[in-house]
Image (tube, rainbow, N blue to C red; front, side, top):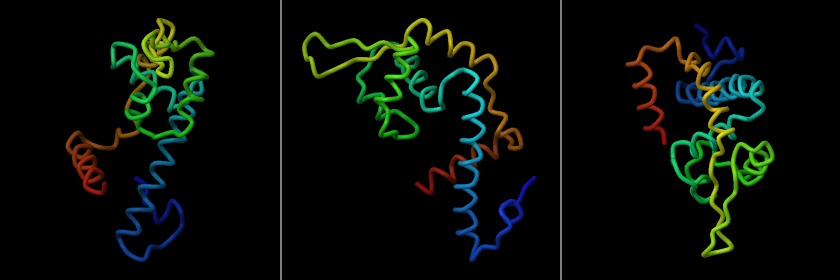
Length: 145
């Protein structure tokens, strides 16, 4: 088990500073692992999030709704969706009542990709935590926000 003080060879002013640095360091560590994992599937973690939002919605939804539901509020969400469209993983559906509104739906190819990812995707980045510890961590992170 690592200790942030040893991992980044630093001492901290107090435990709150140490905790904050540890959160940032751990978030970057998780991002790095996720980027590497999703690279094999030709998508980014943000694009994976968009696909899961669409699968969970079960119907075409507005671009704005997708942006609101994203874990990481990406200002480049439209560009991420453009790339998913280019790969035929999602489809744009113009709204017949309002030309300014576009709905997005996941394609069968997108659902297939998620099924392939689901086969191997594990939460092993948290394998050192018990369910109770994971619940406690989640509660503490909620408390921070």
